[in-house]
Amino acid sequence: MQPFELRGERLLLAVPVAADIDRITELCQDPEIQRWTTLPSPYTHEHAKGFVEDIVPGGWETEKDLVWAIRSPEDRVALGMIGLRARGDGAAEIGYWVGPEARGSRLVSRAVRLVAEYAFADVGPGLTHLLWRAVAGNWASRRVAWACGFRIEGKVRGGIAQRGVRRDTWVATLAAGEPMRPVSPWLDVPTLTGSRVALRRFAESDAAAVVEACNDPVTQHWLGGLPSPYTRDIARAYIRDREEEAAAGRGVHWAAALPEGGPAIGAFSLMGLLTHDGGAEIGYWVHPAARGRGVATEAVGLMARHAFAPVQSGGLGLRRLVIAHVTGNDASRKVMERAGFRPSGVERAGERIRGGIVLDLHWYDLLSDDPLP
Image (cartoon, rainbow, N blue to C red):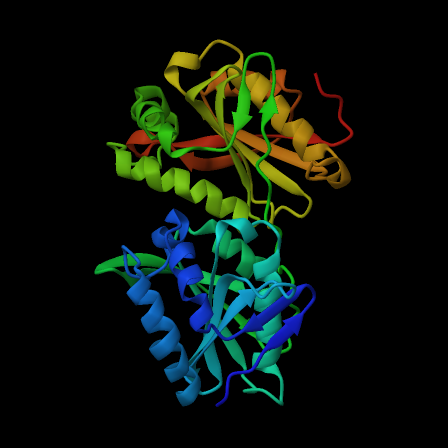
């Protein structure tokens, strides 16, 4: 097959040529490209030369690996790469990377849609499925796939070999005829600030505080499902999973911190957004060093206001929140009552705490038109 160009809105996809070798070498020094791709590291001029002169022409000749440079149509400068690798029987894998100057411009999303339109067209390969893979944690690549309608199918342990190391891998698919737009919301995690507490997204640096809080005897007693001991690796996985919940549209999870900053002093969540039909469940824990200071009450109030705020104002536009405590957890009960929640029922033998003890679960709710303290 002879290489050909694809053109879209403010976008040109054209095969890499010899004049691009220096530019490709320059782009591939970027730390993010090195971090997330399987390109050689360090990436040299000889690597770029071999890519342009051997790998790219070979892929087009066999029709197994079609590679385009993502270019500005005005000056044809290479901004990144995108390609289709045949998987056989109507499927191909799409891959892409872009340099820092073009990030955040939706350029890659437009390039992915352009290539997908060609891939699914009857006058093209007539594919039925496109596959996408990325090293788990590459949120920028995942957001592009999400924006283009790919459905995240899950994570494959050790799914990509990156310079001799097996890395866990996200996988997603897009089928012919499916709309190239998101199939589920990607929830924002805004910073919510009060007088005693600020709710912000979790950071890797919060791991030590999470370990301390989740090994605390009181936390362990009431949250019977927590691992014991609660290790640093478990805390890191917990923090990573908070981002996953938002990306999948299932929930919003915040780390609580002091308004002036510092490590996490608690975790506060709006959970089950896809299953509560206009509502969500609240869950939380507080670091032992922050108990008795009104942190939980204020944090729950901040979450409620964000949950009920209209979508056009940056909120979630929910109509109902629910929250529960087990029999005997009076500290948690007081938080709910101070935050304006009302008793709504008892789930008998609803929760198992530490030691295998089964207790009733006392449910409270709050509606969007209920007065907030």
